[in-house]
Each structure stands twice: as C-alpha cells, then as structure tokens.
Length: 407
Image (cartoon, rainbow, N blue to C red; front, side, top):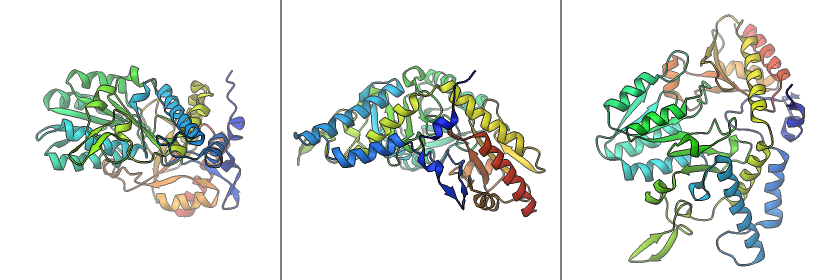
C-alpha cells in the first residue's frame, strides 16, 4: 500500500492555502511553473538575511560562507544529475542554456550545409536559437514530425539520421503541451551511431523524474529551477566535460577569465568559463534546497499519484461532447491539453478562474505544434505531486459548467 500522503506534501507549500477569486485555489498550471515549499522560501530569506555576499572575491567570513553554500549547491545539482561538478553550469533557465549552446557549441561545430534536427513538439526556446545561429552559419533545420497520438515519428528520425548530415539533434524529454515522454535512451544511442550530438530540453522532465545523465549519455541537458520547486531566474546546463572544455565562452566578464591584457585574454575552465559576472548565488543555493526537498519523496509513489490525477481528469472530461485530448500516447506525463467544440480555451479558462481553478490556455510557446494539431490554442491542465483528486473533480465539474454556459 502506498505511503504517499498528499496532505503532508501540501503542508509544505504555503501558497496552496490562499484563495483565488474568493475560493480555495486549485493550481493546475505546473508545466508553466511550480509552487515553492517553505524550505526554499526560508532558504532565500536566510541567505539575504545572514549570508549575502559576492562569491569568488572575498576572504572575509561572510564571503567564505556564501562561497561554501554556492559550491554546495553545485554539488547537490551534480549529484541529482549523477554527473561531475565541473559539468554543471548555472544559467538563468532552460532558455538561456539553449541559447548558450546554440551560440557557443553550435558556432564551433556547425558549418554551411550541416543539419540541425528538431521535433514538431518543441518549445520556441528550442527552435529560435537554432534558427538564429543557422541563419548565420548557413545550416538547415530538419523537422521530425509527430504521429497522431503525439509520439515522435521514429522511422522518420531514423531516415533523417541515415540520409542527412545531422550534426545536432535537439529535442525535449517531455512535451510541455502533449505530455509525450520521448524514449531518450534509444534516440541518443541511435543518434550517436551517426556522430550526431544530442541536446535534451529537460524542463518538463526534471520535476517528475530522477536524472542519471551519465547513464542517459546525452551530450547536453538543461532544465529550469522554477519548474522543480525552486526559484525563478536559475537554471542548469549539463554538458560532457570534454565538450564544455572545447567550447568558446558565451559571454565575457569577470570570473570567466584566467588572464586579461589588452593584447588578449585566456579563459578559465568550465564551469567558470560560462558564468561571467556576479552569479545568481541566492537562487542557486535555493535550487539546491529544492532538489534536496524533492529527493525525500519516493519517485514511484509521486508518479503513481500524478498519473491518477491525469486519469481522473481525463475520465471526467472525456464525456463532454466535442472534447478532444491532444496527446494520447500511453504512459504520458501528467499534462492534459484539450479542446472542446464551441468553447474557446480563453473563455473556458476565465470561467474556471472564477471557480478558483488555474489552468493555462494559448499556444504554450509551441506555435508550430499548434499548426500540426490544427488549432490556435488549447486548454492545458498540468499536475504536480501536491495536487489532489478533489482538485481534478473541481476541474471536471467547472468545465462541464463552462461548456453549458458557452454553447
């Protein structure tokens, strides 16, 4: 019998006690950002109250304490990902990590005629940076389509890898819109047979999976702190050490240098080479606390709970005439994107908001995917381990009510 206690989990998240439009909030927008536990909030407050100092610069006690906590945060992240500390770069988030890769690794590896492979389910953050660098270098982008159930067309991908000069394959671990979980191990193994580098956007997988990036064998992996119960403004880029050392810096400034003169500059090793200027010390430390907090829960129990939430919502909504779920592949993550004939997603969300229910509507930064689905926008409910079956029942009841009002 599962020992997972959702009420115990919820007790750590103070924002879940507030109201929304005068009703208890049902926060179902976790694919956009997660809420923060008390320990993360306290960690941030404690840093600014007791430890605030710049790192890498001071020999006084306060600076030494800040430096030690910052170094500890990197160690926590590295352990969480099962990699070495020098393979972890702190960024502002997944978006900055992907831009760093495109402009540093991409510029060093790509040349005219090379191919960058992306999938139809990608977030704009995993499309636009590659377009920018591709236009500069004369590369082309090959789009790997999805199948009707939202899964990746593996046969198409295999043919592209065989027939074209694909230097970089960049894809999401989990679709933020469809909930599709890509079979990364198989894809990475196949891509490496053709000497293709693999970049993984892990923004949606980090909050729901234990990461063993050494075993996964991807070349790069990135995620955002704010989606894994940590603060906004901090993210992580993992890269294999030998690749990071060969990459040129992305930005110049303090701390990323070895020696500077007006005749030239030499650079520090990774990760410092990619962390120019004053780092986001407080949020990095709080990210470490978020990962420590999440690690205390049994992952299988968390996943079973989130799957039960998804199935409850799916079952309750599926009998609405004109209901269509986008992304139906078995074993998907706890993300439910849907359309209902005669009910515009924005109107639906407004009515749900009046009932205290927070969902996301729009294109979810996936306009090419919306085109594939034949819609301009969807409604999306995305679940976390602090959500309850009672909240999914409220979602179902309020959606039925909204459809009656809108038709």
